[in-house]
Image (cartoon, rainbow over all chains, first blue to last red; front, side, top):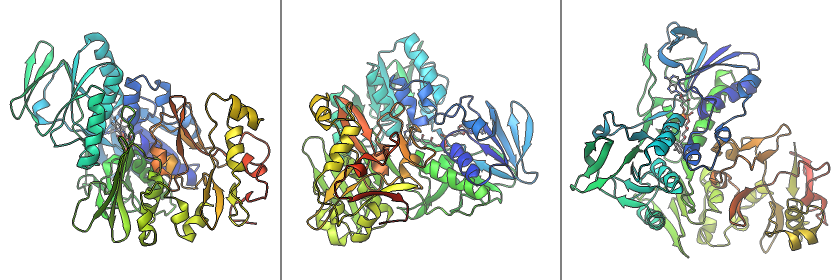
Length: 418
Length: 152
Ligand SMILES: Cc1cc2nc3c(=O)[nH]c(=O)nc-3n(C[C@H](O)[C@H](O)[C@H](O)COP(=O)(O)OP(=O)(O)OC[C@H]3O[C@@H](n4cnc5c(N)ncnc54)[C@H](O)[C@@H]3O)c2cc1C
């Protein structure tokens, strides 16, 4: 069997590991547009903040490809896939490579709001290693004073954190009414906001940028919907991510918000698999097919794709969205349907002391989502109950109590842990 | 692979598993007294004594086959060694705590080491030749080290 993997990040690496669990002989070719050894994308903000060295960004040791006998084409982009001839075309090398099994693990690409489309010297993406290498250089050369970050989501706030740690003045512009809107409720977001304001970050909410003021340095001011003008010397874009649709695929792949995959990570074209941020698989909490663009999801899907590509039938039970993001000392963890407010859902929450907020989202005697701010030490156990679809009716009154633990759980759960 | 199993019927909740675990992972692994009296920070255990009115037991990382913490680790610092033990490379850990929410049993803990946050988990005392320390020092064999599947 010969395998081709497009991508060199979490899903691709997990794909290699999955294949090698089953097939030690088959030829594996891995192609990536980026030239770097496999690195961890979430570490770009840590790198910028000086919390992690360049070497420690590597997602796998330097001998990973050699040890797994992977032939790499780094700095090469797949521009087309031809399922008829079972080949992929590479540029700039201008070669066609054949595959028997193909894994598309091309991840996502950052969304550029229309108002920012253009060539501005001081406009930076905040998405991959090359972005922060460039940014790092610009910060040193241009010495900006005010940095505006477009987007108060997970990536925007990680960017904001790294800039604060670099002693920059940071302004976050969020088009929605509160921070972390995709994973957080208003109450939790208010705590995060309060904490970040204390760290010196300035915020603008509910007003998207509608126009730019430009000058010699590039963007010098952002004009918001209500005509407020926010002066800045540099702009970082963190306005969201979408699946990086692969280049032309003759024959077409079925897609929605990502490439549609079944529980074996098989796409609509036999022999072609997809995993990670580019794929749209089963979300086990929402119980629908939808993208869950997180690293653990990419890893799980990638490994399952690898196993199935190598002939071991392994079914995924779906993935759960969850995150833990410490922001300037404040812990934040969310999982599942954390923003759900529908009628059938009952929130159970607890606040304080200090910046502590814990909320479970219950429905039909099950936990469907959680938000923990400040103290996340028990979040894992609740997430475990979510994964198991555990019936919480016998210990519902103890949920979120300070001594909640194994002792309240049913016998079979206790046996599993002992 | 051998794992530590707790026998809740034998456990008397003495807490020695925690004491010895904390000690062996401290600067003074050979001496409980030194570990607790001389360490700059109070030594922290990676095994947790859980108790209710009916039972008790020392619990620690299950070294899961399909480990959620490894899948979720954003740096690759959480890994499995050749013997199947799930380990955290503290050098590469950035304390994002994703493993804390990934672990379905809540067995990875954050700890404050004099202002520095660290994440701690059971390493099955893999660097020792003998059985894990919690097992060695459990006075009534309420913690045993056995091949998976096997119990008593
Ligand atoms: C700043 C930041 C912080 C984050 N923090 C977290 C976090 O705390 N927790 C979490 O769970 N997730 C986090 N994420 C999300 C996480 O990084 C992604 O979910 C994960 O990287 C997805 O992995 P992937 O392998 O699917 O794709 P990607 O990491 O996007 O990798 C895609 C790969 O495909 C290659 N590629 C793309 N197109 C082509 C092509 N046409 N030809 C050849 N190669 C191509 C790219 O070079 C790259 O190697 C963060 C993301 C960012 C940007």
